[in-house]
Length: 74
Image 1 (cartoon, rainbow, N blue to C red):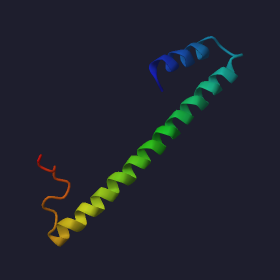
Image 2: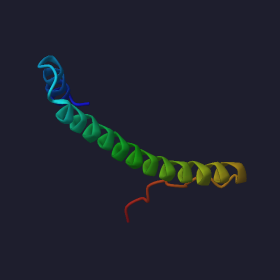
Image 3: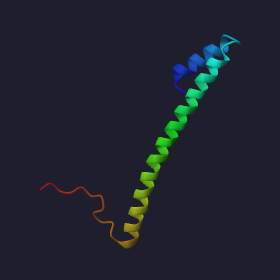
Image 4: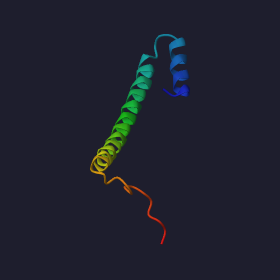
């Protein structure tokens, strides 16, 4: 949770009862932000995994030399 949001949440807690819906809204927003980040990271991980599988296959086949090597300028 971002520090600013955490401070807001803590302030609500310190102010006592009556703001539970605001607290819940902050927690729900944070939960959604974490879910969104997990989805993004999961997508990135899938791409990385595909590259690992491809490269592993090239290494095993002895064809890894030059894979993903920059093309020299003409």
